[in-house]
Image 1: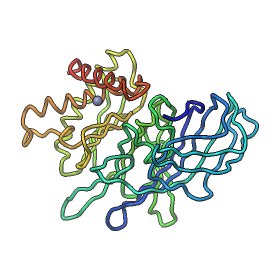
Image 2: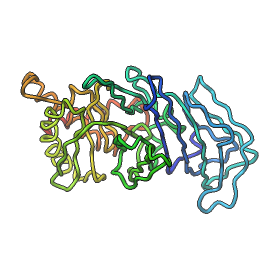
Image 3: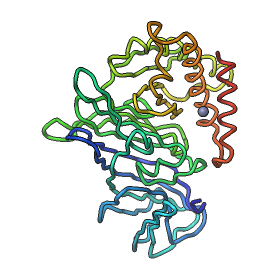
Image 4: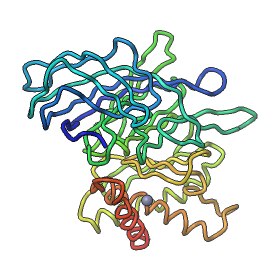
Length: 343
Ligand SMILES: [Zn+2]
């Protein structure tokens, strides 16, 4: 476990997965800016990082709001056994002071079968291989995508920017708020998504996809979109028809409105199971798609039940979260109960 002397408040994250040249393994690089408050004096910062190479000379440490100065970084070291990144300072951080830590890093996208952190997935259509990028952070794999305080109780808000090729679509937890070109040849485009609610790092999610989508608006005005590869789009209509009423029921039952302007449901060929990331739920295709022509009838109930379970987690797990993983059965228990009740 990380020491509890530092508490994150906000992250600015930028990631640029590069799936556009040749075959896997594919690289990615990015940057993170972590805002945190000191709760106990310390001369060392400890965060989680696995499989990432910190770019030489990219680490910067500055005082945050209301804090006059910050000590200098003297050295840093990765402890692969504990997934820790130790950053040593030449002076103390004092209780109540705020700081900002920045760094650039690079890594390799994992495979869909590993399904940890940022990973690539693929499918074949019209004789071509299409590559996409997905994420899976629960339980402790956010640290594979960006250095962070990767524990469920260490909640913060997150601003995510995904850099993609101009012909792909990027999704994040929040709705898209800005798009800008990132290269003179017009190849790279950066999409920035709205600040997330205050949440655990295991709920950060993204997708860089070439899927079409269908959309609707829920009774309370939330945009609901269902994304899948083009071939399977006819099977996305059913999910779209049930996702709205499920959301309406949960808002009504809990008395808490869904705090984001949109929720995306994304079906991918290599994804395992389903994951309730706040505002961006990932599914394996058979969990989200239903087509009368080729799905057995019982799948109709099953798909609705998986969607209800993942949408229920937006409240039970995402809004109210277990402090540590030994209590995660509560998330699952409530989400499973709500899924029956909502249907
Ligand atoms: Zn669950």
